[in-house]
Amino acid sequence: MEKICEYNDCTGCALCAAMCPRSCISMKEGRLGHLMPVIDVKSCIDCGKCADCCPVNFSSPGSRRSVRPPIQFRLPSSAWAAWAKDEAEYITSTSGGAASVLARYIVSQGGAVYGSAVVPSAPAGPPEGFSVSHVRIYDLNGISRLKGSKYVCSSIAGVFPEIKGDVRSGKPTLFIGTPCQVAAVRSMFGQVPENLLLVDIVCHGVPSLSLLRYYVRRYLHIPPSAVTGLSFRNTEGFVMEISGKDVHYSHPPLDGSRTGNLYYNLFMDGFTYRDSCYSCPFAGERRVSDMTLGDFWGLGKDVPEHPYGVSLIMPVTSKGEKLIAVLRDNMYLYRRTVGEAAAGNDQLRAPKHKSLRIRLFRCLEPIFGLRIYYLLTADWILKKRLYRLLDRNRKKDTVK
Ligand SMILES: Cc1cc2nc3c(=O)[nH]c(=O)nc-3n(C[C@H](O)[C@H](O)[C@H](O)COP(=O)(O)OP(=O)(O)OC[C@H]3O[C@@H](n4cnc5c(N)ncnc54)[C@H](O)[C@@H]3O)c2cc1C
Ligand code: SF4
Ligand code: SF4
Ligand code: SF4
Image 1 (cartoon, rainbow, N blue to C red):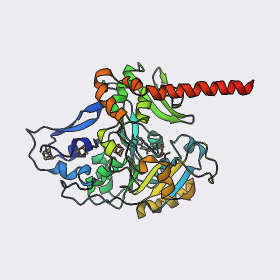
Image 2: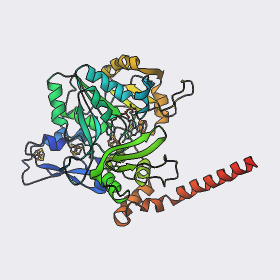
Image 3: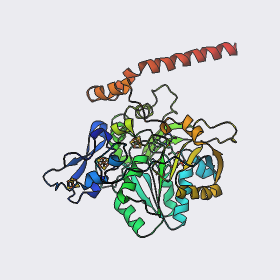
């Protein structure tokens, strides 16, 4: 097998490696540390299983490689603005806490939940340090591990066999992840089993774990092996917080000046995503999951105050629709329209545009390093500083 799917379309899900009968596919770091499958051609028997399971080969319109029919993308049947009734649940979630409410429900039914968690390195673990990967949660205490958006690629490579095991044993099984990860889990089964619930989050792209570790080590001078906790949002806004033994790092909330935290600004401006993110087939109103969760940006003012953000919930299939009743018990729910949700959320309309600045950054970064970003966005930074200066002077004049 020469190539599994088009290089720039590969989402790094690692399903091909998990399905290869000869275990001859390994995931190796490519551009900006993103993991790409590499085939050991000497061991390959050219069976074609990798290309047949690859979700990219039947998620992109016009793809002819796969023997399977294309994945059905469906329009959500409704859209809801929501936040958790339980204040502690609400405050500790990224938006309205819908993911945790769903996870609690599945665990209380004796099921298993798969979601993204920060995994500290074991004392004798690999020298690279912490990782971010999907883990299996089966008790209520474990749910807090999944809370919060991790703005980095979360590895799902380790959970394919466990998901298969849970689904085959008949357990209610919930998988929450990016749409391309949901497509990979769907692809593992072909036909989605009745006891498997697939929830995707609206996603504009992911940087690699390798880049995050590099940033932590090189720019923050924190050994990645000392990191035990990592979060990207708190009640003040977009803040990266890192904790561990003798480690505490945070910065003032991002304010548009693009100087607060280089990793975070690179992420927000879309400079460090996987190549596949700039042509993502999942960035649109039509979805691959049973239910989509996101932030409800641009929500009308006729909804009561919701101080810590608000979830967008869009049921897509009848399985997703049934969950609205479960959410209603634990969340304040307000019916809205899919159109309103899409109008406020770029990723429900189109993938991130790979602008000239982004292209230049990706060419120049290997030579000049991540800080070349500041040069490429100097006009944005200067504009922000100028506005700030004018604002300060205006305030001074008002006080006089
Ligand atoms: C990389 C990324 C980009 C996003 N971009 C957008 C966007 O453009 N627009 C928008 O509306 N929403 C976006 N979101 C989703 C949003 O930030 C919230 O995750 C979502 O609204 C759910 O919030 P919550 O309060 O219900 O749950 P939370 O408590 O925040 O739980 C989040 C759930 O998402 C899962 N998760 C967290 N990080 C990852 C990850 N790296 N990979 C896979 N799964 C993960 C966890 O398993 C958990 O179940 C993005 C999230 C991520 C991770
Ligand atoms: S063709 Fe078969 S043996 Fe070769 S890499 Fe793909 S799955 Fe593995
Ligand atoms: S998208 Fe997933 S299955 Fe397809 S080549 Fe990339 S890692 Fe393999
Ligand atoms: S933007 Fe698309 S390809 Fe990139 S991580 Fe998100 S869902 Fe996957």
